[in-house]
Picture (cartoon, one colour):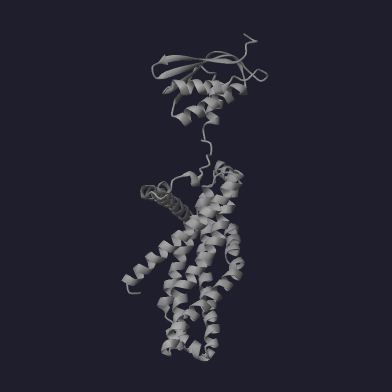
Length: 376
């Protein structure tokens, strides 16, 4: 028995089940049993259940577990029930550990039919899963914020301060560039039409109201979604890859309180301030175009003063708070739920940006409809 090579035999247990009888010593140095021959026999028999019997096993090591894993994967791929009988407890434990997480499968989208990818039911199902996951994440975030208010949170002030600096001052350059250009674009588009009626002065009204209510906050949020939202996802995704989040959880610290809350609060504080900054620079950008039309700065800013309304300002400011939460939730959720590996971190960052942009567009449209119905 000690010299017996590893071998197997298939016996019929019932009309729908087959027993795989393992014999011999399944140890390194022995010739591996031919799994392809076993696969061919299983395909020919087409059973509904495969029972692996280890009652006649001799010595074994990882060679046995590798063979069992191949059997398990074949059964899973073919929809065959897999059952162990009289296998060593250690082998069962190792097999259970090896099959605890399904192997990652790459799906080649180009091989999928176009109608399958655009199936409305599939899209609605995916949207439902996404909404359910987002609502669950927001619920955990609300609980963490309540614990922070009650003084029971593990959130650190130093983390909040660092993320405020990362979110705010570090973003001034890109916000300055985009805001001035957006103000110039608004002024130019308005000037082309208003010049036909000799009403070029009302370019100031267009730029001011457009920046305060819509473009200032929306463009700032889009930039922050691509900059800060992706950064949050990449940071947390890397921590997930390095098992840092698992270590934090093992120590009894909530990742939501320790990692997510300071990031959300930082964006919630800095995005409204960046929005105000963007509004000011947008008006300055409009001034550049107005000066090219022959409108003096004094006349331009006089018209700005007449067109200014606290309502327009508060509408844009209220949007900034909503957008801040949506961007932070999209980025942190993608990072926390990221897989392990560099590819997974990249996918998390991409998912964070795309999800945040979708959230922003839907939320902006909904808020505008609400304000219109309220005549604000």
